[in-house]
Image 1: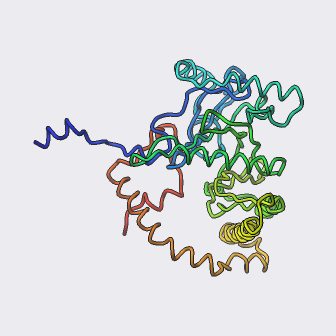
Image 2 (image 1 turned 90 degrees about the horizontal axis):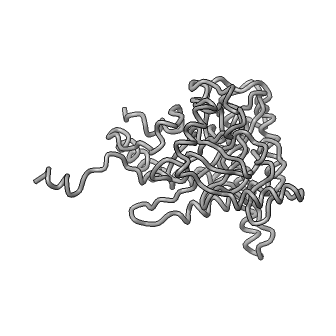
Image 3 (image 1 turned 120 degrees about the vertical axis):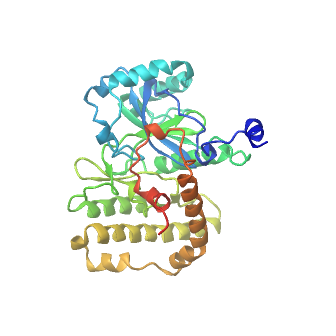
Length: 356
């Protein structure tokens, strides 16, 4: 009887609905009229799959790094492609039948470039995309969860991040927005470097430069909101910092009526303060000798709302980690892009390790 039930209702080996995409992302895409081939996946979680694409036919992969170097990559592109340029082209040819077509959008982008426009009308593509050899594409969630459609979440997140990237255009340390990809994705420039949670430690003065980036972002009326994750902070080859992933960012809405704009403004101010708290906390733990007395005080000032938030969300965090740990131990927490991903992701160790 059990065998018969397995035939009628076969057991799924992997719990694929815990990931944004039910299968692999497109093997090839076009951005700004230029073809790109999938070269790797930095991260694939419930809300999005963040991928590295290389331009085809431009000799980009000739000096590609080794797979070991590529393994140090995360969301906005630390490291290079795990494939050579030839391999990427071959992969693109193999997947050409299922590639996404963006000819109309590319044409609009080219027209915008000729006119000197910052973004092509109606396309969201920046002419800068025409000269970028490597890009990072973030595909929003498009598959349902427990039967409930969630593609609207992917669309909302994409629109939100687009607005933030446009708002922060020109800020040093913020990757350039390059445009939309398909219905739920977008592309930004690829930043060579390694995440802050990957060794070795950053060079002296890194956190002071990072503070200037936060100050510039806050001056534009944007609170980052995700500074607690070291994986969102990149160290470029020259030792400079970059901030990636603006899914949780919040910006002032001075165009909204009162009292909504006042409430949002106050919330932005509070979250901006939390940004500095996490920045100083990272600095205290990684570069304690560079700390000033003021930074030391900021790094230890959690604040009442922060403590309350931690207490209220602790049950959720505990249940989530227990569930993910159980799924991992059963071998069901395997993403559809596992063979393309960087498996050194310290933030996942909270549920990968077994309970003592």
